[in-house]
Amino acid sequence: MNILILNGSPRHNGNTQLLAQSFAKGAEENGHKIEFISVDDVNVNPCKGCNACFKNKDMLCVQHDDMAEIYAKLANADGFIRMLPKGYD
Image 1: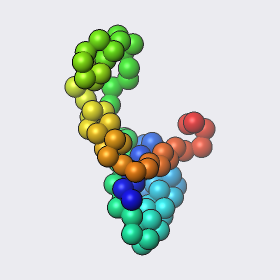
Image 2: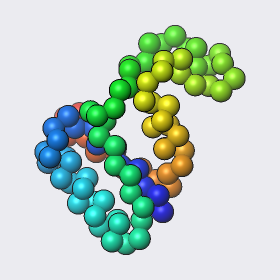
Image 3: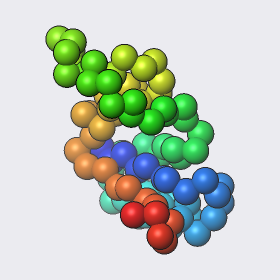
């Protein structure tokens, strides 16, 4: 199983990342393939609400940031884990 982990905490080596890494280790030990993305390390712009994504044939955002790559990884994953620090959900 391919699992994508999205770490939403801006603190590298903080509790959220350590928890995500612990999950990843256990999943890998059980034969799963893990990809880990720290959201703080990628360039993702907020939605502008322009609705251009609904108007083009591919339904892709017109902003050229890293979100397109994350969408592709999500589409190829069998599951994903979203890790957020307390108070961010």
